[in-house]
Length: 326
Image (cartoon, rainbow, N blue to C red; front, side):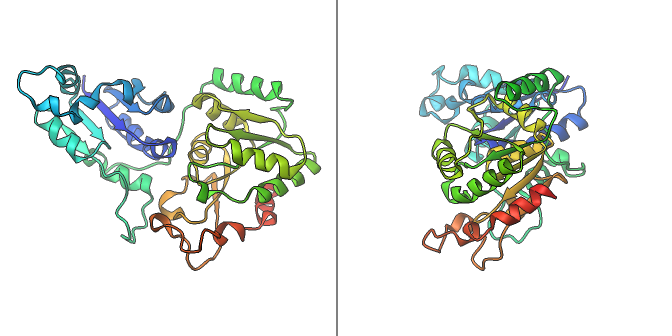
């Protein structure tokens, strides 16, 4: 049986946009043993595709970056060597230093660039770029990322909604006002206006709050002035299941938005300084809203507007509401 290992460091969104690599390898090698390593519990989102998932930080691969690894007679890297040698193919985003070091002990590693080339003018999304960077998949059909959610997980998610006063049998709008990058966030007062309108119409609303989102969520709560359930720091697979039960989702350029799209929810994703062609969640269930500001996207170059972020502030709440209600 062929053994394949996928190593994907990075944040939630980085992992989700590389899920098509795991799915493509599973389709090409249906009988293979496929392992996936990522930070913390992120790799569990490959459940249903991977044979086994694990925490990258616990895998011991740090030995490949230590000087002691290269000293003859030292055993610092022996377990790591045995581990990576056990695979026929390793797809890695750890960088070329890892590839060269691993190759020196006989491992077959394909190093995938961490980001698409800047300013390349490509029409490929980052997800498509990563997929095409794997030689075994160059003739395969790329498909948008999908997280496989079990019936039991959906039942658990429905129970969580009910515990928070929501009826999962009726439409629920999910809102995530945070992001891993503060400059990617739509203004809290805009989110608040959306929440007030929806609650005023009797629409069920739930907000999601991760470990980095407390300030953004609290700002929306204060500005909205209406009570809305907030689900805080759910385990990722539980979060995916709850998102899958939402009729629609509204969020920034964030990992949670990628997760909502991969869970199959109808998503309205708000983009400002980053390039949606490259980084937006993929799928027919995703609608990306932007504004026509000359300096957007500014991307990795950083905002040149003195952080006024007109690209986000000029995106009117009424426009977002129209997308939710259509």
